[in-house]
Amino acid sequence: MQRRPLIAGNWKMNGLAAHLEEVDAIAALAAEKPTVDVALFLPATLIARAVPRAGVVAIGGQDVHGETHGAFTGNVSAAMLHDVGATAVLVGHSERRTYHGETSPDVAIKAAQGHAHGLSVVLCVGEDAAVRNEGKAEQWVSDQLLASLPADADPEWLTIAYEPIWAIGTGVIPTIDEIAAMHGALRSALRGVIGDKADTMRILYGGSVTGDNAPDILGLDDVDGALVGGASLTAAKFAPIIAAA
Ligand code: PEP
Image (cartoon, rainbow, N blue to C red; front, side, top):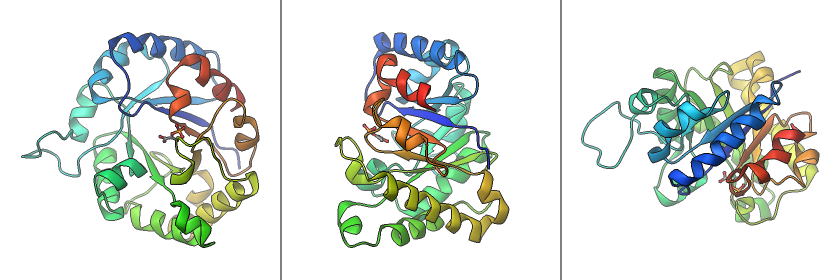
């Protein structure tokens, strides 16, 4: 099944106005690779300024609140993201789940909010090292995915990102066989809920993706792109990952 690859960068809490030059350079890379979708999940403070410079690159927020509006100091709603020109949002990143106590039902609500306001959604799942070491990763992450899935999940607007927590920012990645097995398990879990639509749902891999390991990871049948943290902060490091897709 042919699925259009998505290479997405997550800048996390990095980036000031000066870094918008990297958006320009990444926009140029994306324009040269029309077979691949490219997205950047930026700090909320940069979104409005990045959108006019992004060309074909989708600009997204890194989180969204589950409510439409109200007394939620410091939070951003899906309508606000849409209002500043974002077309996508990341939900359920492990740093949100770990540091902000977000549960899988919270993540499902956030995904639905994003969709309700016209945003495409990348929904993250992934196990910690203890689960991996117990040999339970595939079942555990499949369960987490199903608990995080919004009711109307559809590949038209939803993408899954498998990100083992122990691989994020560590330089350590699962073996190619472990990635293949996990992506196969997640697709079959999806099939149980959304049937044949699982065949067109993109499942990205994330966790210490670099230009060096991207060709092997992206070469796997069930891997439909990458969610990239550190190596998305500069066009120079992001370029070989886009090229490998
Ligand atoms: C991430 O933050 O989603 C991520 C995968 O980070 P890194 O690529 O730096 O491991």
